[in-house]
Structures are given as structure tokens and as C-alpha cells.
Image (cartoon, rainbow over all chains, first blue to last red; front, side, top):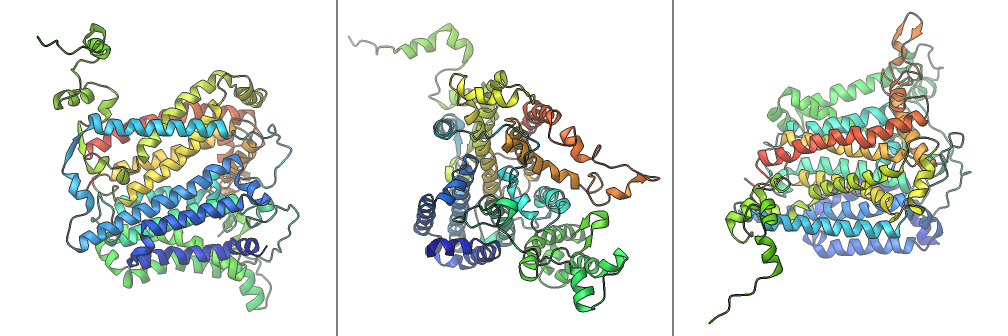
Length: 360
Length: 263
């Protein structure tokens, strides 16, 4: 069917992520279009999403993956993350409008008023507990926890997947070696989150929703959270089948699907295709261009940015904070860069030193 | 002559010696007693007596942090019940999980535990999103944001260690995939960059029998030693650390000025 094949095509990572990148920035750029961020638009988006899932469930291939017990929470998460991202932006834009008319943010109207914890907060918590309790019990009665065949070290399932919340990291394995995707980047995510309060030079927007006062922070954080974390989990869960190959949501997970592997390293491009000589024996000479490129990325970019776009940040933050901020940002942006290098040029490694398990 | 209003059974209960020995204040119908209700209760006194009205709004807080804590309690209780039946050995683990559903009365404890765990992961992410979007990590709450990040990591580790315990194909291979990453840890994993450089004479110091992955799994592959290790971490190790950090987290929410609000 045409619709299904179009969706399958759209879900291909190069197309999907390009669309998501565009949508992400467009949604923030077009924030002045109030109808786009209105509850009605959100409701329509929600209805469309729900209708798509409902329609998809009529398809056997779609149903097989989405109704896997452990995948049900991910579908719920998709809607929850979407709703709360929308809600926070909606409240932020409302506050921005108020502050544009030099009114205080909405929270300010009530933040000076102190309310007794008993009964108001205690009852809210109590209700929340009951609702969650009921939801969990109903959910548990109707959806059985998964249990497969007994563990068998001799029989590797295909695909073998990590628990769903780590599938974003597993998805990065497509573009990076394990030491980056599985160790370095997760470590940097934790370090980056912890460093956040210390490298954020903006003192405004503390304790209320706002976008206008915190554009860069929100764009960066949400890009990392929505696109590079949640979307990667979605891709890793729903679109990666046997042999970690891509499968559209309506496509059958065929173990025998063949995907041509034409990935090529930067050193091969330069020495073989450009210089038309063989690869040098010495690994350092072989990889010198890649090493220089990576060094330039991490050393020259911060200097260039300090002179140009990031000048205000640099002046406000000082050397150390600025360096940490830009290093973390460059690491984050390296993922989409590596993705596009792969999709556009079949680039495998920029620096490939398998002798020392050091591939970038 | 007007008859005095009839006392309800609850009024009688309130006047009993037993009740008054537990709750040492009158009914919470005035400010003083409502304050005492919070102040004299060890559980409720995690709260201050009064909070900002804006902090009560569900659209502001989404109740995400509270939900995460509630789910932690659910996991503790259901986990405790599961521990009565579950034996963490390669021989029994899988059949014990099967028996949990078919032989144990009210056999949904494992379901509640598993779905609660997934919900907790989602709730903790949403809590982080809310705290970020309201700028609540900014001074003076930087330190508490850091405690929160650690708690988020611990939540994921709790979920990951628990994932192995059913000892089925899903569990074993998910943990195999996850722990294979440790093999690539720079310098500490046998396939990590730099590991080959660590050697004395000709003898490498880092190999499959002593690297980061080996420490995680207590072996070269996911076997019964890994099951025991994950079980102990899941039931005792990580919850203990998380409980300590939660105490710090809640304490600091109060000490840093309560639920955040515009200054």
C-alpha cells in the first residue's frame, strides 16, 4: 500500500532525522505563530499520533513490534514526552507574552502566597498515589510481563537488544565504536548534565517557564533530550531489526535482508582515491589527516567560535567554563555530524587505528 | 432544651486514649493543628509546613518527582514480596519467575514491579525535563540538580540490574549487549583503546579475565556469578545508595528554599 511504503521510507534514519532536525528547529523558530502552539494544535497532533498508532495496529508487522510487552511503555513515553514538552513550551510562551507586556510570569502571582501543606499538598500527593496505584494494577492485570525461553548462552537472538532505555546508546553504535557510544558519550552525558548549572551563564528564568529568556539553554537541552535521546531510542526500538538493519514500521523483520556495506574510512578516501597510492604502513602517517581533522574540530572550533558567534558567552563565562561548554557541545554535535558523514559519504571512521582499538 | 449534637464514631475515636497517644494534636481544622499534623509526623515532616501556592499547581510540577518517589516505594514493596519466592541461581531463577505467575496468590507482583520500573524511568526523565524547563537547577539549587542526576543514573542502573533476574533469553542477551560496552572502556576494557599499552614487559595487564566487563559480570560471560552479582546490587547495593541520595535530595529541596518559584 502506498501509505505504508511512504511511512517506511520516511522512517529511514537519514530521512527521519533530517525531518526531525527541521521540524525541531522550525517549531521553535515559528513560536510566534500562536495557533501552532495552541492546545487545539496539540490536540490535533495527539489525535493524529493516536490515529496512526491505531491504524498501525491493524498491520501484522507493526503490531508485532509495538505490542511487545516491553515496547508498550515506550509508546506511552513517546506521547508523555511529547505532551510535557509541549506543555512546558506552551506555559513558557504564555509567560513570555506576559513579560512582553511587563507583567510578571504567571507563577509569580502565586509564588508569594504560602499555603499549608496539610491539607492541600498532602491531598494532592495522596490523589496522585491512588491514581498511579490504580493505573499500575490495571496495567499489570491486562499486560503480562514478558518472559521468553530460559536463558541459553549458546543461542544468540537476532536482533539482540539492550534494555529499551539504553537503545539510544545502542543506536549510536551504528555510527561509533563501543568505546565512544557505550562508554565515552554516556559518561559525557552524565558529566554534561552535572556541569550544566555551573556552565550556564544565564541567571534569568529561575523558577518559572520561559523561552525568551533562555533560548539557547532550552534549544540545546531539548535537542539532546528529544532528538538525540528519545528519537534514538524510538529508532533503536522500532526500526532496528535483525543484524541491526533498518526496517520500516510496516516492513517484515526479514533475517535475510541484505544491506550493502560500502563504508569507507577517511584514510582510504585520501590515500587511495585522492592520492592514488596505497595506504601507508605506518598507522600514524596513514591516519594523520583524520587526526588533524579531529584535533582541529576540538581545538580550532572553540577559538573560532570565541571570536564570532559565541563571543558574548566567552566574555561572560571566562576561559575554563567556556572551554568545558564548547567541548561538551562539540561532542554532542559530533553525533549528527557523524550520522551525516555516514549517510552522505558512507564514512566509516575518520580516524581508524584498529591496532589500538582507537577508531573515531 | 437543645440536645447537644450527636457525636460520630470518629469523634469518639478521636477522643480515645489510643488515638491521642499517636496523634498529639487536635483535629486539623485550624492553622495550628494543621501545622502540627505535618510537624509531628516523621513522614510528613519531609515537607515544610507551608509551600508556595505556585508549587502546588500540577501544571507547574507535573508531580513528576513525587511520582518517581512513589514508584520507588512501590518497587521496594513489590520487590520485597518477590524476594520471598525468587532464588538468584541459574538453576532456579527462571522457574521461580514462572511460578510467580502460576503458583503465587495475587500473581501480578512481578508485573507491577516491572511496569512500575519502566514507569519510574519515564517519570524520572520527565522530572528532569520539568526541573530543566523551569530553570530550577540554577543557583542556589546546583548541588541538588547534581544529586538528581546521580539518582537518575541509579534509577537506570536499578532497572538494568533487575533486567537480568528473570534469567530468560531477553534478560541474558540484553545484559550481554549492555555489558559488552564495558569491554571497550578506555584502558580498563580488553578491547578498549589504550588497554594494549598497559603491560609489564610482554605481559598485558588488561585481558578478558580481569577487565571492566569481568568486574561487572564476575566472569567472562553472563553466567550464574553475574546473576548473583546483579541480584545483590539490585536488591541491596543500589537501593541503599539511592535511599541515602534521596534523603539528601529531599532535604536539600527544603534547605535550598523549597519548590522553586520566581524570585
